[in-house]
Length: 179
Image 1 (cartoon, rainbow, N blue to C red):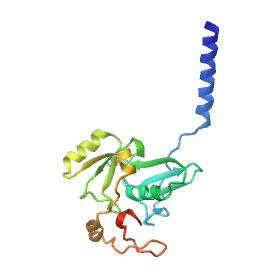
Image 2: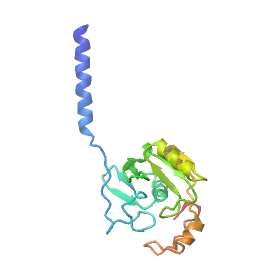
Image 3: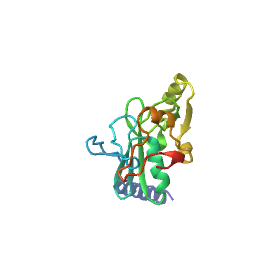
Image 4: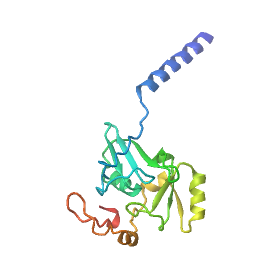
């Protein structure tokens, strides 16, 4: 009986090591500010706390200038096989998996496309930010899946984004969560 148990443990260890060796950890790629543009709004992506990224199973990476743009892409590309989604910590710009982040929506927080959602690598930082910024709402990654992504149109008008056009020439009204 003892030999069978040892054999079973040895086989389990071998299988676990084979499985672990077959899957590389997915990591975000560096943002190239000179050439990277958002997949949704075609704006330049700045290497800052608002940049987000999706890595597809086929290895293709896509960058976005705002968390809202990334989620709009996800909603309109449900058939794409996503390997990982990354956001950045609002304080130190560290890349984190989107499902591990805690989010805060605050209508007065400026983001590139005025979705007003920022991400934090830990819940404590998000709670501190929310406490310091009246009108904040804490959100989880699960909350963002069905979140009603609306832009702050007043903020868009103030930031001269109104009338911005996509590379295809379509006006960027961003109403009702669509580009």
